[in-house]
Image (cartoon, rainbow, N blue to C red; front, top):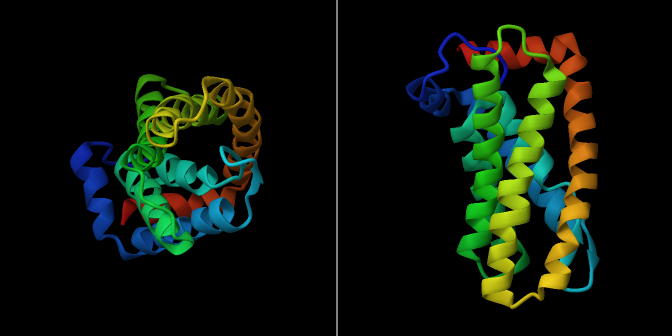
Amino acid sequence: MITSKNNSAVGNIKLFGNVRVMTVAGLFIAMSIVLGKFLAINIGTSIRISFENLPVLMAGIFFGPFVGGAVGLGADIIGSILKGYDINPIIALGAASIGIFSGLSSMLISRTRAKTTSIVNIIVSVFSAHIIGSMIIKSIGMIVYFHTPIEVIALRVPLYIGIGLLEFFVIFLLLKNKAFVSYIERMNHR
């Protein structure tokens, strides 16, 4: 998470009361829905190439695990309703966990290292979130609800390694922009 004066859980919950953060979280939900449900490339019925998790990862890294989890959950539920899909609670949990684990990883790395390089922070945040949320939890949801074969589930590992690398690059470039980082930090301190 971008450095903030109050890294406690209570401080992160207070971000929900910040109108600017709530507005950006709403925009992240909308971006995730568009990227995941309307601009995705579907390969068969079980594999989808999309960047729906990019806004969820950004919400977790920039605003913490609570906002990240809310963005992931909101995007999955609202997107499923808009597309007419049944809401799969395990996949919804996986979407929320992407935001939660990206935010937790970022927050813990920022606390434990005196001089955290943004590269280490972003890599760990993106890949821990994808391993837990996309590769494990969402895959379990696909197996349980859709009876997706293990061979197809195995294809998700290289897919999310590639997508994760591209998402890392986008987030890294955003965090190299000093004006962008300054704006995010101002939002976190209000």
